[in-house]
Amino acid sequence: MASFQFELVAPEKLVYSGEVESVVIPGTEGEFTVLKDHAPLISAIRPGVIVVEKTAAAKLRLYVRGGFAEVAPSGLTILADQALPLEEVDAAKLDAEIDIFEEELTRAVTDEARRIAVEKRDQLRELKAALRR
Image 1 (cartoon, one colour):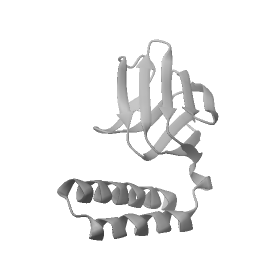
Image 2 (cartoon, helix red, strand yellow; image 1 turned 180 degrees about the vertical axis):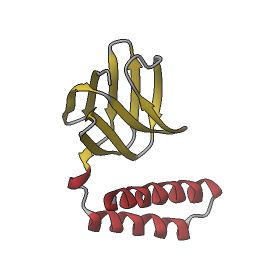
Image 3 (cartoon, one colour; image 1 turned 90 degrees about the horizontal axis):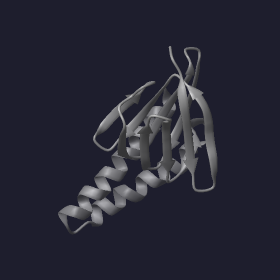
Image 4 (cartoon, one colour; image 1 turned 90 degrees about the vertical axis):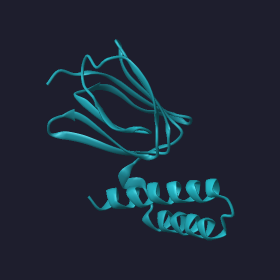
């Protein structure tokens, strides 16, 4: 498969830079895959797992907590709010964060507050499920 340039940047560091064959991104409008010569686009990213396929045999899975992806003729750049290799995500802390959003959900007085709490809780549950894969 043909490769292209990919960079993943978080506020504290350059997380990844190199040639890859594909990247699966959790966009706010749904998951999408970028391959070489993908049409240019800019998309917001929701919290989730990015799957970077360096080669058919080498994959890297990273948790991102939102951000933006830009596909250009020069390649793909992701500016993430936070990015961690999946193996560095602490399951106990994740459970604690899920509990916080469950509590926020029970205290929510507006539909918008309930919607946000449910969205955040569900994103964290999705991440927890990804840890088991």
